[in-house]
Length: 462
Ligand SMILES: Cc1ncc(COP(=O)(O)O)c(C=O)c1O
Ligand SMILES: N[C@@H](CCOP(=O)(O)O)C(=O)O
Image 1 (cartoon, rainbow, N blue to C red):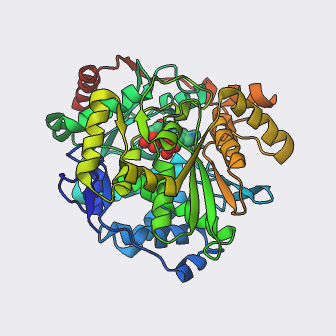
Image 2 (tube, rainbow, N blue to C red):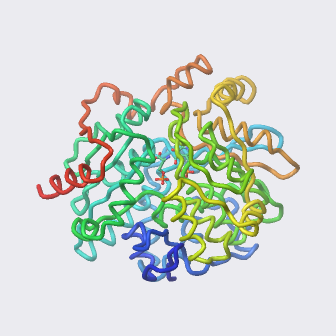
């Protein structure tokens, strides 16, 4: 399996190279040259199988000869062994035709663990074999950072630097990043918002001297392996509600577009997905884009679903690549307009393609709080604010097709917002009950590339 860049001019890579690289050298994102398909019979066979078995079958065609089958199976088993639910991604019924996919039973209580725990194992295996050392730099609005730190803490071959927007993540999210004591973990509180952090990471990848000098690796969803791991739960959940014999729709709380794009890959692999519904909070750029065909950035407003406070949504570039029938030059043109002017207009054909696959909805702050209260009172589910955004949009898109909404984080990661909305304080699981008492360790940095690079260089020199 070979991987190509969305912008068409970077070297073609193997799975291992794409995984260890992160961003392509032309600024694009890697994608498989072709998407393997699964027969309806194979998909039907997933029903009732353990999560790890399905994960193996779904991901194997993408990894080429990077690992032997036995090695890959061991990696998957190790990745999910620390999850707090036997099903890994349990599905609960919310209404007659509406289901909630709980993706928060991993070690850091967010869906990011599904991919990050796997990537931690994949990196370890690949780096042990090559004897290489890498510097991971990631941007987070809260959940990617804690999941990455959990997956890479204490590993000899990796330093992990996480850039998070100072004051714009929840206390629990921040403490998950600042309390680990391992010396290879570096939490950097950046002046600015998530987009400032993400732009700095991308600029580091585009600074080849820095990139090659520190052996930069990325674990944001710009990394294809992140998206791949998330494809699996679209299969496990769909077969539980009747796929492939009947179509299914999904609603996905969306920010950087990685999670919902994994659904698009599942659909291309043969899963009968009718609609992928984008659910946004008040930072609604993706909803506006679906309504108008124009991607226009505005300032980010802090919200009670902070992990989705994003304007420059990385993986929308991958969606555009397919909407433009895999023309890298068209994608490169749009991305360059975005960098220069903060906006771009999608061609009519590409816009129609996007609308065939995706629908969208926007949820205000008040509606999010009301949804948390309503879900607890009427459905018996205490939702995190991101999941509440998803459930609200899903209710607005109900049809005869079963709808699965992705619950992307545990309510205990956002206790203030959840308590204000429902009157209930969601407790942290026992294993992290003392999180708020642990000592914090972080470095405050200005949102400037040179300052961040200099801290990274200095730290890895030691
Ligand atoms: C809890 C939560 N929900 C939803 C999202 C949005 O996911 P994506 O960025 O893959 O669209 C994020 C962050 O990415 C998140 O942390
Ligand atoms: N919401 C994310 C933002 C980064 O997204 P990623 O999927 O590209 O890593 C977060 O919680 O950090």
